[in-house]
Length: 286
Ligand SMILES: N[C@H](CCC[C@H](N)C(=O)O)C(=O)O
Image 1: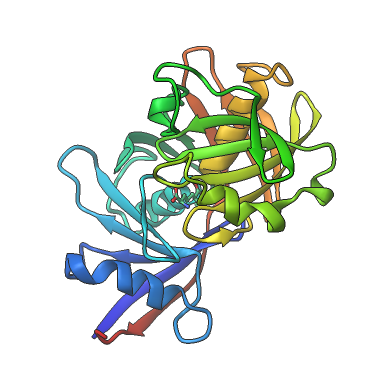
Image 2 (image 1 turned 120 degrees about the vertical axis):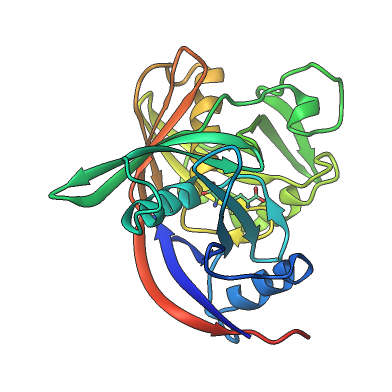
């Protein structure tokens, strides 16, 4: 089965994008296609699969599948790449439009320089902080802000934020010494998170600058995570390190994102999106 695809990345967080206005995939095959196409050895190689779809509630729809075939609900880097794709393909005719994800509808704003897409700003919506809606087991309406999180011999301090997808944020003194590789996978599948969790370690350099590393649910270590960067800025503000209504620069492995948690509750993310390649992927059911 031949599938046309475009490979794109946001700060190195790369996905295989399939235009579902042109392609037809069987719903039951999609998780396996995500696993297969993401494989660096036998597939194209990526952090996962993103489908660009029609939507009845917004101009465009987006679905994200992780490297392991699990479906996420939103994807910040993916949203910027989808916005670039649909603007350049003229699916939309303005620089401001809506994109529907499983986490809800977001507003995207394409910024041009000399007629080319230079950066994209996305209103990522309002973060969810109640434990039960992260989701995380425990008391219903409580927030999880710098809560002791025991993990074997480790005693961590957890702040949990959902951007429509779950994030466990931990503060470290030195990002180079974060236990990302030792603990990321364990935390991401800890049974205190019934749906798993994206796990971020952050070092607050100053109120307007954060170093960031991520172990993504379903994909492992990635170069960047847009929704994770948003969750990290929310966590920094909740813990009194940063302030609302200020643009905060998040230094991810793959580059910088600019994030603002506005006093109206909405979180804004601004950053780049790049097209790597177009191609044909030959997939066979197995
Ligand atoms: N890389 C994405 C997040 C993917 C989230 C996915 N790993 C999940 O299961 O929630 C981003 O830029 O926001």
